[in-house]
Figure (cartoon, rainbow, N blue to C red):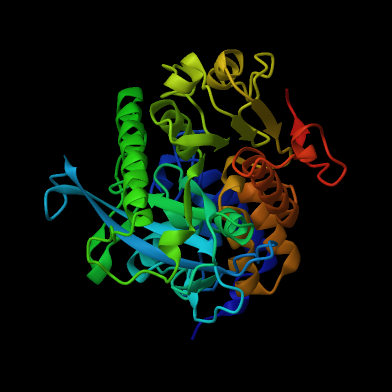
Length: 444
């Protein structure tokens, strides 16, 4: 019989402290992005002390409700790039899974989509549970948790700007769901991309591609996977163009939501990403004129944070608007801030040829720009019913800033940015620091 009480407040907080340390080490490569984290020493003995209970039930997470006026729908596409070879794929061609999140018709009804498909959920929950507690069994019930989007419901009438999302290395596309659903609720079609062979990916019919074992990529290896991501992005844009013209790009020709084709306004395309996804967004803009604006959430724009070389966006700047949004412990452009100085952000700031803004979110950690910012609280509170302990664990993983304010600030500034440059709406929020979001600092 499971002993739920054995997770005392002392143990849960101790486990959270261990989580904060171990998530910054190579041991958790499949659970978190390693490209920009400090490489500390895992607190093995502390973790072992925290993980003494026998088994625990997987606990559901609660994706925070978006604040926009629209109901939202979602569907997935299986895309095959017949121009690029991939010897690890059954057909020898590059395959991708993407999710499309979109404004739904006002009275659309249907089941809520699950947070992740079963095999992806199991792999990621197991890696997180092992990294944080040293437990074999999964604690995070990602497959049983609902999103705020209804599966396959009709799209809202009218054309909507399109925003692409690229996750951190080697994360899943689903770890940006809270930010993505907000944009969809605000009138955007958002397309999230899994970069196959990085994070785990589940294809139709249950075929599964596990994530990478490459924990600490060299600069050359990082450049290779970022280049692959940029090619993925451009291919996805090509497939969306086919979709908007009336074709079904899904490899299995599965039925698509009613009205989805007509919902895409590909004259207005933006992109954002977390960590390596932010670097991907910048490089994709440099390579593809179809992307009109982009945002980088706490990602270096170099192939190695300390040693370089710089990516093209940092080296030459961009001729389209770009937003930098950094955590408390990374990405300032002032070389006097030795602990958080990133030469690539400083170079980008100097070389950028269009609109630019550098925002800072004090009290946040790197992982606070992904869905990690809320689901550790959900799981630990679900196990213990201990509010203080769950808050402490969440703080250890993603920063001391209140998780609700952290997400609210990210949602507000991302929406304002894309509203300004894709919808051409004036945005006072981007002009100076706001009393509505005192958490956010304008670095430059």
